[in-house]
Length: 342
Image 1 (cartoon, rainbow, N blue to C red):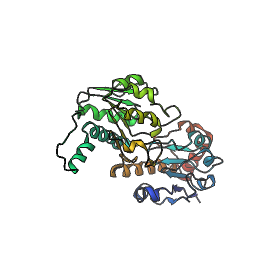
Image 2: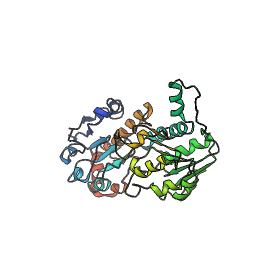
Image 3: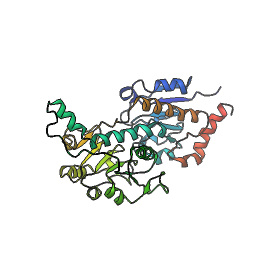
Image 4: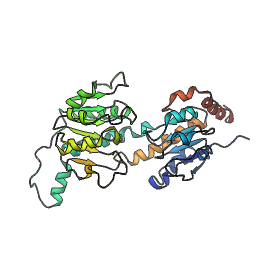
């Protein structure tokens, strides 16, 4: 008798995303055995992980010790695209595929970036507070601006940046610049440039790269000093890519015009964080891309990644592609092909 493919769902879904995953599980994986994993704190234990063939993960940490000695687990299907909380080399060493859901976040994050751009360019918070306070057109800001004719720069030129640039062309941005040492060719209509050029020449700089040891504090005091005094920084990627102390100083000194932040160095953001007190900063709780469509699609694509493994196939978007050549990983996939008579 063929063994049952078992799926574990990290317990944080029950508190942070209750009810979002279940419809996709029923649609994509009907009849597959799944359960919420036992709550073992911020990181699952190895013995818990090895009770499953697949794990759908929201925001738990997966450090090396969680994966040490794991033998059964074949895939961690991340609900989203960020994987800075998952030890990728440890996944590979344990013959575990790490899969993500870029199709689900491309448009929602790009729209979130423009939400922040427009709110900053049009001084939306100031106008809102004036109107609510009964100060109709009293001391209105004179620095609101159009985006047409401006330069949009991106630190990173991957999936989300590509969608952002596609939208930017329709909005009338005159120049599109990107810094990304990992990408040999830029999206259509985008000029690859040095980080200094992107920071110096852009009117809006969007952070669109993943967090890694190479990108942590990538944007610090020197890089912020390159920016125009009238320019804005948008970060919807990961907080630690931008040095918070340097950003606070640049904003306090009005050395840049402002910032739109969906992410922070520490999350949840502490109430005493100085960024929360600034009138030239717009903030959101790492959720500006959380739309009905992104909830649906993250869930569907995460389940489809699990479905592929349950059928003995590699998911479409694998972070650690080298794992697919390892004998242990190939044996796990092959076992499900055999069980299904493929």
